[in-house]
Image (cartoon, rainbow over all chains, first blue to last red; front, side, top):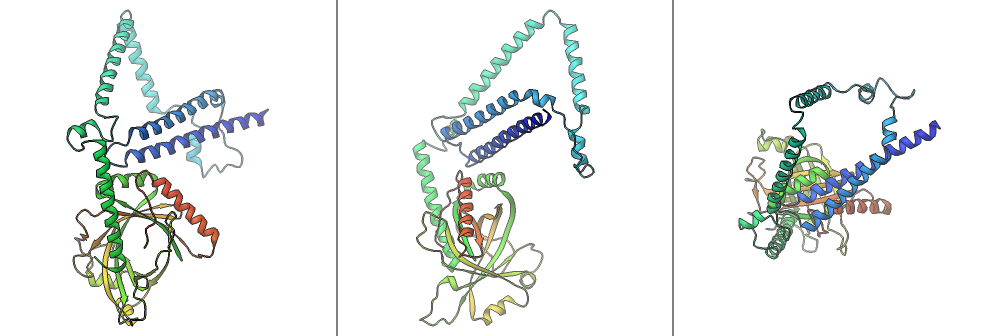
Length: 200
Length: 207
């Protein structure tokens, strides 16, 4: 029974580690795409990569939920063969059962604030909560609309760039990029020729 | 030794963005500042080849600008390169060309190459960054011209007003007859090409 339990625990941790590695890889790739140029990447590309990220995060969440009991009941302790002296800092971290002082302080402050809010305004709590939620939703809606206005989902550039006259349209942008690439390739040929034979 | 390589070009406008992406994707960067001097055979008879693949290329790193040009030339570690022509008919694959490198350990390099029957042809400076992906090297650099001959003092002048950056991805295989090693090296280049395809199109350009 102990061996079976250990194997399940290892499988749980390995599954979580694998999913996290996938997310890291996807994030790296997504950042590379976003930094490809000063202009915003095409919407289909962003949408596709964002969906991949969402799917992977969803998978990780499901995996964490499925193995929650195993994770909660797992205790970490070193085996007899473990190099205790060499890995003392790691052991100190893994075997810690007491919360960090910062966390304890944060917890105490939160409890104090909560108790103070209960004692001062016990009857108006529900009304205030509802009002705050409405305010929060209104602010979120405003922020979302403002952010949406900053982008043109039918083009390669933001609306601000378009309004500033940097680009006329997607077609013009494609033409400009093709011309730029053609010029760069010609320069590449010239530079390589100079490096090889000195001809300019 | 064979060099398997791919080349790409990055417009100046996108240099910062590409470097950011490379730094997040590959190991590095390491700064590159190299001085290259090319010598060609002199008094070549008409019936012998005059192609640049037989020219000698001397290379050294510029690590500081405190020394005088003469002192630097004497004290620096020079390497000598021979770079052959690329193999033809490999449009859809990586480029392959023979390269040889030797370190010059003693004596004046100028006297050495002149006694071998070579004369000065041209010189340039390579400035950029170098990244690594396992045994594959990724370089992004610009080719600059010294302000004076054999001078390591800035400023260095670009060849064009809006000169692009060259993205050079390469790996070396010591034994070209080792098909397994060649195939593995080509596969690694393909991986890097796929990895960098989001921000640069790497191609086989004849050298």
